[in-house]
Length: 63
Image: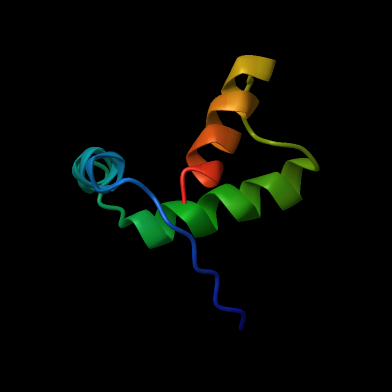
């Protein structure tokens, strides 16, 4: 097993946790599901734009 650690803004984590709880998932379980689907499909399992990628990079660079 590999441990992955990353930082998120607290409000984003809290909102995500609340939404995922409605589906019976933890944030950690949803991350594993995302990774499994990425491998199964051989691509990111949803559509995204260059702006989405830039926003994700901004979140990473905040630290």
